[in-house]
Amino acid sequence: MEIEEVFGKVLREIRLEKKFSQEELAHICGLDRTYISLMERGKRKPTINTIFALASGLNVLPSSLVLATESIFDLES
Amino acid sequence: MEIEEVFGKVLREIRLEKKFSQEELAHICGLDRTYISLMERGKRKPTINTIFALASGLNVLPSSLVLATESIFDLES
DNA sequence: TTGTAGACTACTGTCGACA
DNA sequence: ATGTCGACAGTAGTCTACA
Image 1 (cartoon, chains in turn red, yellow, brown, blue):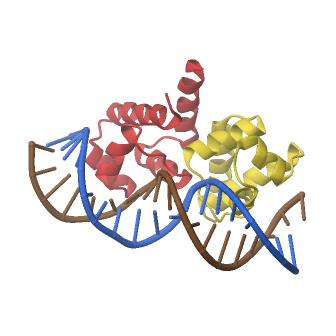
Image 2 (cartoon, chains in turn purple, yellow, cyan, green; image 1 turned 120 degrees about the vertical axis):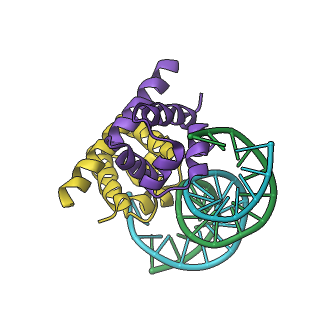
Image 3 (cartoon, protein in one colour; image 1 turned 60 degrees about the vertical axis):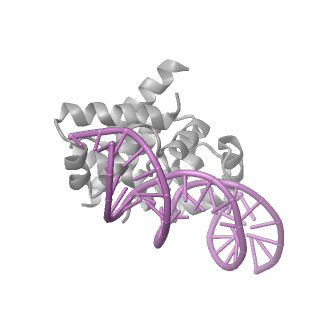
């Protein structure tokens, strides 16, 4: 599994925990809804600025998104 | 100061701590030397995959790069 | 050893539409 | 509420070269 796929799973999990729709999250973060969809399915590799925007919208630390991603990623290898 | 500028400072600081030249780091990470230079000067916004590659080359956790970045970034605002 | 420039390719991120 | 498509603009990232 590629890094961006793991990140996508983490993103979706946290978004659902926070009870946001993709559209709500997109609006809060200033991103496009279809792009949230692409990221959650591992089709895009967000830049650091996008990671910060997502974290802000989800009300979590950017580093916690990355920590969750690397934890799952490391489990696999 | 923009996110990518803070990230650049963090990157340079850790690279120098580890006593790597830009060229050595670039080679280890599989990136271009001129691109390391661009990032350190805040001229580029790395994707999540690039952050993982840099962290691997520097022998630190990706999340620690982001944690250092957000810590400095939050100080300013 | 690093900064910078220019030219280039590939991909990030937007948008409108439809299932 | 989400996936997907196609078209698009902007930028990530490479490479060569020179100060």
